Image 1 (cartoon, rainbow, N blue to C red):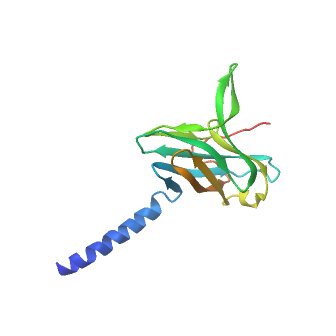
Image 2 (tube, rainbow, N blue to C red):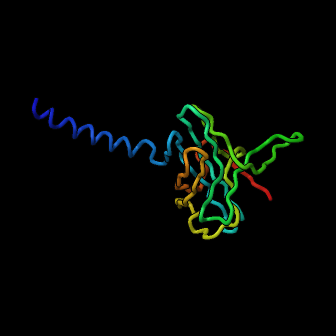
Image 3 (cartoon, one colour):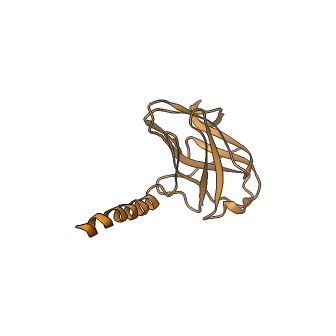
Length: 164
């Protein structure tokens, strides 16, 4: 039994380290908010814009608000949503998005997304690349995430077309 008592803490530490590396490898946390799996699709080298997608989960008891985003990759970063207008789906820029208490907001193709305009160094936009994106929240503060660039969207993500 003495061996077991000495080994048990080491076993738990090893299990936590292994589990921690598997769960949430692409998740970021600030306060009660979790930003899950930020990604962007690889685009042609001359693409004028790039969209970023992720999920924000709020495990807290009060709403928070995403008030803005920024990335050194772009001259400008905007929050966009899709709305139905005149029988068509249209994109529009918004100044913020509520992240409901005990809820989530999904940023996905043909839905909410971050649009990066005036792209600078595009070398980070190749498949497998990563680039920083900072999200500004009204209550939780700022969190920097690393956006993974993928040649193909994740299963079920669909495609995102963004015009002018």
